Amino acid sequence: MKDMKIVCGANWGDEGKGLMTDYFSQKPNSIVVCSNGGAQRGHTVITSNGIRHVFHHFGSGTFNHASTYLSEDFIVNPIIFKQEYDELMKLGYVPNVYINQNCMLTTPFDMMANQIIEENRGKNKHGSCGLGIFETIKRYKAGITDVDNHIREYYLEQFERENIILTDEWSRIFLDNGIFEHFLDDWDFMNNHSLAISDNYFLNQFDNIVFEAAQGLLLDQNNTEYFPHLTPSNTGIKNPKRIIENVEWNDEINIETCYVSRTYLTRHGAGKFPSECNKRFINEYMFDKTNVPNPFQDTLRYGTLDLGELYSRCSNDVGNFGDKKSIAITHCNEYDWDNDKLIELFKDWNIYYSDGETHNDVN
Image 1 (cartoon, rainbow, N blue to C red):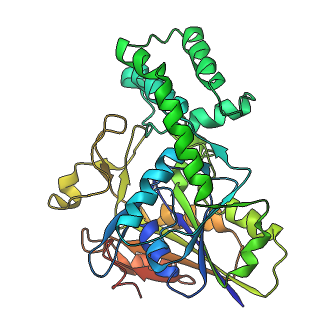
Image 2 (tube, rainbow, N blue to C red; image 1 turned 90 degrees about the horizontal axis):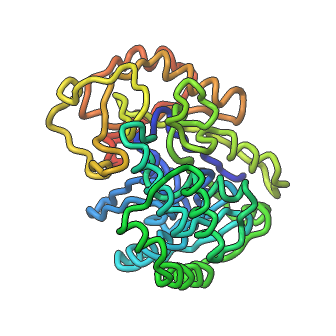
């Protein structure tokens, strides 16, 4: 029997997906499948002895020595891969990584273009992380897939077409050939420290498979109510479900889909936020070490959580797929919520609780 867990964010991200992935990947012979997003992911794990890391390009089961699989829906960034690989090595962990050969590849030109375009939007910025995710997707759709200096020309033409004027500093950086040469070194490093995969059948060699989604259901690319402040990917069960259904498994499988939510809502970046409130209304003393202010997403925003809407989002996403459904409620020590109503709504689901930093309280 193969155990499969699908971990999805229930809201706008920042719910505790890294925490739950770490919890589910403690079993021997585990692999974490990164099923969407890219280097803009930021999933925090804190070990029992106090080691803290924010996972971007590797599965959040790495501290349990679980392997990582960057599936075909993951957008690979060799620059971030190299940086994070070195960070994990310094912490004493050697990641074992598989990368699907159909993954899209982000270059420094995509990252710089993302930041330039976002800066030019001014007050109308989308709240991007500045890591070139959307630009990478658009470039691939335009047929510019070869990794060479033609990518720079592609963006220079786009800037001219859209009347985007580069500052002297951006012009200097964008035309610096040394940046691209350094990127090629990082790309070689990534290829030398990972295994290329042509299809998903290799997952049969693992007994415990954890699908780790990025962002959350409210940021899904099809959630048009919040357009354009969305992420260009499927943030729920869609990608893991497709992978699971398209593999011919060599054993029986047991699937549990777990949605993760804080006891309140957060949103990092621009966009509509109907229940937004001052942080003091939630808890003026708490501090989020991961979601610090940055020039692209500004400061983390807070709001109240409607449990009925939470249940509707999660149940509509999972449908009848899998053997078990669960909800993980994190940051329980930061804000009071109606636990009786939660139990009533999710009466047929497994319920996990955590303080949001460790899974010592998960039950």
